[in-house]
Amino acid sequence: MNPTLDLLYRLADDQLILGHRNSEWNGLGPILEEDIAFSSMAQDKLGHSLQLYGLLHELGEAEPDTVAFTRNAPQFHCCQLTELPIGEYDFSLIRHFLFDHAELLRFEALADSSYEPLALVARKVKGELKYHVLHANTWVKRLGTATEEAIERMQAALEFTLPYALSIFETTEAEPEIISSGLFIGEAELQARWEASISKVLAQTALTLPDLRTLTPVAGGRQGQHTEHLQPLLDEMAEVFRLDPTADW
Amino acid sequence: MPTTKAQILDWLQAVTDPEIPTISLVDLGVIREVRVEDDGGVYVRLTPTFAGCPAMDYMRRDVETTLKAHGIPRVTTEISLRDPWTSDMVTDRGREGLRRHGLATPPKLNGGLLDLDILEYAECPRCHTTNTELRTPFGATLCRAVHYCHDCRQIFEQFKPI
Image 1 (tube, rainbow over the protein chains, first blue to last red):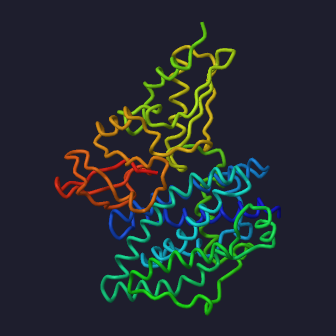
Image 2: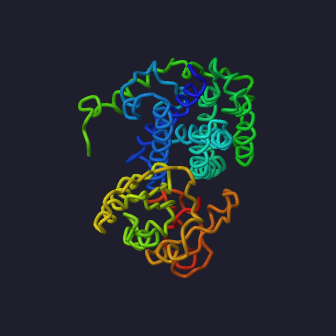
Image 3: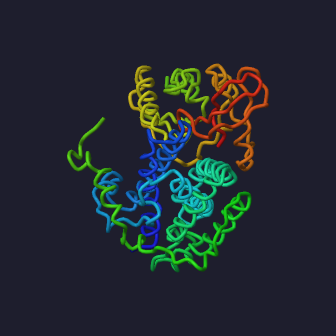
């Protein structure tokens, strides 16, 4: 795949799928503020995916709705981290923390992309992502320094989630060209920045970051290999569109 | 006599934010460009406050309806991230409008970086103290955060800095 399309599909699909997962907290949040926070972040992420699918459309791909709602799991390029069910709040919070630290750094770097339309979107999105990171940091610090049970659950969630989080940085064969053409700094550089960024926050808690080099990333998502959880998500998300593509409300 | 840009901007003062009736789109800073074409048509470029703002289509429609009601034969609108919105684009009159709606105004960034500390800062719209604390960066709409005033002992909303 052309490097620009390859990069844009990965970015857009991550936003769409995690946005949808975040929306599943609507009505279920442990407190009202968290219900609203996850719903708001869902709305932001769907907005970001729409901007990115819009860029793909300008490059000749199908309409954003068609791209979002008519593909099946093997055609999606999101990392597996984004598609896992919301589980308990500790998992969703840790996923949000690990993912959005990477996203903020990613879009800050993309603001200098050699592909100007993407740089424009990134300059907009990075400001909004600061609120996501602020939110994640607040709760990780609060629960990561709270009761024994809270710390235990957060630590367990961190250890479960990290191998999936490393899949954020899975590369494709377009990677060398993405870097050499100045489209993006590349996943390895991003991962280094991310490690520094999450370590700084975790150091203010009772949580321990395992040695990431001892972990095996759960890769495959960028190549269309997904967990059994993605297809049911897509079926539910696209239910109305597939019944009636012209439905409007 | 062709309509002037100043006249168009004046008419657009009547088009307010769909959820904050005390601020016009012009004062909110989301109307980034107005151009009167040679044939009398008008082009208006808008930019969203937040990329996922669901009110953009309403804003666009309200701009078109208002200008057509003033007899503009052809109105073209475009939503673009060129020249992206920041909270510093809210005019002084706009900030006054936000306060009249009971919202705290975003602190001025003056082109500076939006750091995580400034997000926590807000002045209470009732008693004007800064003895306040950020309760959650997400509120009733994407562009609002929720703070608590320790003096009033009341929750209040702020139009977010970005």
